[in-house]
Image (tube, helix red, strand yellow):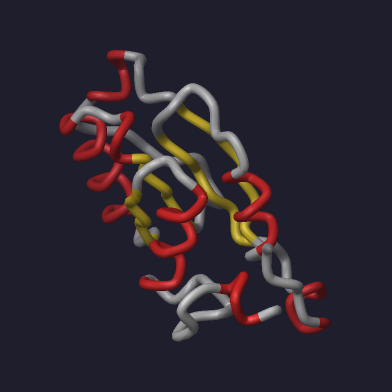
Amino acid sequence: MFPVLSSSQLHRPALSAIVVGADRLGNIPNLLRGHNIAITHHISGRDPAHQKKTLALPSGTQIVILLTDFLGHNVMKTFRNAAQKSGVKVVACRRSVCAMQQALEQCGLCQCAGLARCEQSGV
């Protein structure tokens, strides 16, 4: 179901990601792990402090993943601005494995970009 990492990917360090939104992530960590992406922080976005205009991302963050169906507009805007200031890529999608897979393909983080579905390719 999830892509198999090639030998070049096994030697490459995982991208560190912050996931913002939702209380539970379900199977999303497994999907991200299959794409060599490690979740370093998971933030639910419920804390009012997450709506601050000046928010700094943890050092070493390479991707910010926003789960849009579990976030308010102000929280989303705050994390987008923090990512932009840090030069970090933002991936926004709903909290589902299918939506995450599609978002990874669209932004080029999926090793199967260009294929309809990784599961169908037998990779």
